[in-house]
Length: 414
Image (tube, rainbow, N blue to C red):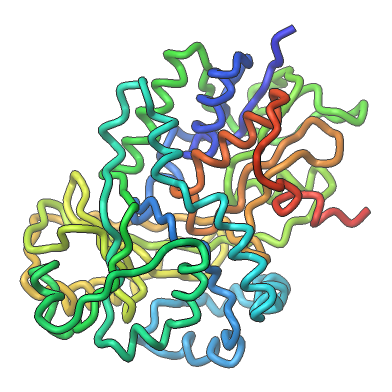
């Protein structure tokens, strides 16, 4: 009998899972309260960040954290009224800021991100959506060689994963990226990366592919699950129950309250991410560029230049803050002094940040509920690989990596 699967979440992870499951012959429905690709997957830097296996929680973060919060030029913001709610998660998060934990997390993230370009190409192959995936270098821009050397620890972990940068200095920087400010004196370039020119449009197009393959997409709110017999039999939506054999929970930070209904409290917070699209931009970057000082990425996209990377902790309910947008604009102007554009689009969304920086991928006990969320800021990068792994597990195809690293049961209390 064909396995009937419901995927909760129509972002890059959910849609990727759906496509791979249809390829493997499963009966699949994707459920989301919004349209495919219009949530968290819509707003990001668009980078297929193969070398993004190094977590934020590195050695030395704890003593630096207060200075980061009170530095008006540092791209980290906190809504202080939210701090009492944030504190328990923050203590767990900072507890991973050691060399041993950083290396453990990096080793866990590497299989999810390192082959991202290959995974996106495998996902789109033969679907007519291949053109969305663009091969590129990935630049890291620094004021000087000393600033690059200050991140030696990070680069050593990237090199352990096979990503060795090519360095340019002085005038060679502007020869590679003519529109960069002359204040940028060192450029570290990593090959074998890529980007998506319109992430929201890309995921929406993939959802259309999923439907053409016989998959179904339903727009409604999921409110509960029926596990009365110890195993999932239906998903309860605001429009009534939907019967199934298996559920895949892939709805990002909104997975947390649903996990609580399943008996697991996940230490997960919203990393409120900001981006600005400078529509019709000229005199920006040729290739995607991470600006070390402002900790933002500038990516040339179909609509213009998208700059993303500001982080704010303030929960799910509050609207966007003005200060992150103002700081981002200031850093962009300093980095690309001759940038011109026609209009601007602002966006703020919620990225799911688990306390240990590792996604949750796997079955909850033996309930028939599979998790596929918690990708922090690497959702677009790791979405297709995660979807493929989940589809393999659900159809009896053993993944070629150790999935125990990502098990959601690491947060179970019994």
